[in-house]
Image 1 (cartoon, rainbow over the protein chains, first blue to last red):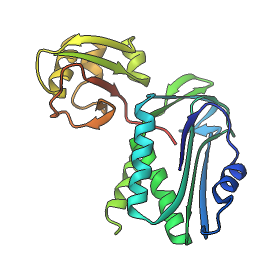
Image 2 (tube, rainbow over the protein chains, first blue to last red):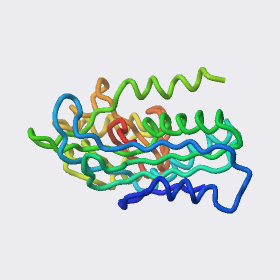
Image 3 (cartoon, chains in turn green, orange):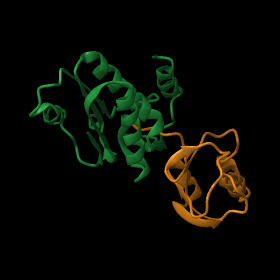
Length: 152
Length: 83
């Protein structure tokens, strides 16, 4: 299990390789990487700054990974979220989930991202040609996390 | 009771303060919000019932009815936008 908040860039291949190194029980690793886009709400984004709540962030991420572990038979989870100033194209977040079979890995990976979107205290501020603006939370994020309550 | 109150992101910028210690006259998170709203101006505006904000006590998101304890760390922030 690896849960990290960092300013540095991460490398998907290295993280996934580290999970399966020296073990042969893993049958599936599903991963997700979220990237900073150059466009949001109809205007160009030149850069963004990610702020967080040190202390609570780590606890919130650990709690949602714990929820995923309680729900599916997982062999390992890596969750990395960056903070600080990022440019379009930069990776923001990485989730990788290892399991015996793909079903658990796919589902848990998506669950962790959906839960992170509404439970982890990160905030994005974008720099656009019109000035700086805080990103508003999306209703679709609440909808995405709520559907897990209905899935057995 | 004495509380340590933290503000994040847009609320920190609007209030012009990241952290403060204050004396709460009431007992719940809702009492704290009411006390802050009574400051008027941006406080009244941003913490109005129709505005979306979250409250965390000792680093866990809570409902406004939660009863606070002396020296609790209370954070008030906008809905999160990570990922």
